[in-house]
Image (cartoon, rainbow, N blue to C red):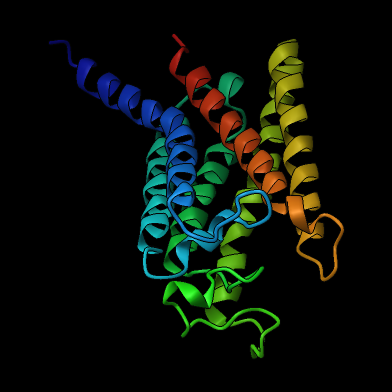
Length: 229
């Protein structure tokens, strides 16, 4: 075996996990949500699945996906700048990983009446039902969401810059479009969480669109880096 075979295999494995992290994360929370009584994916956020007796499944899902992105970010940092983008791009991908791990450590506050008290989770206060406001854990969860939903658009726009200079119009257009889509759908999701919002019944859909587009771009970035000679 050549001396470069070991490092090359390790790089390929890391980027493969970076490609698969998003699809695995989405598949897992979809399956978890389908088995949770009272959970309506169209209006409730993904983070709500981390609450309740079986919440550890979604917490683990957050942490595994985060660890995979952190692993992939190191190899993205070793890729050519003309394909990956400036060095800040791998750092932002690592920030996404850290944000996911933190989102698993700190659970969000209950929202939209989930989990329902009839499921044996009466000890969890419901928003609008005499709760004392946001908890520290809930605030930290929201804080860790920033490098995910803000970091991905920034990484995409930053990666698009060298693509424009190199006349790689397809990657530049895809990256800019992904950044705009992630920000737009997340803004609609945030609006759906406002009291008496007309979008409340579809807030979960907007969040899933934001996650799907953003994590899809991360998968494409890993594939792009792995195909570099």
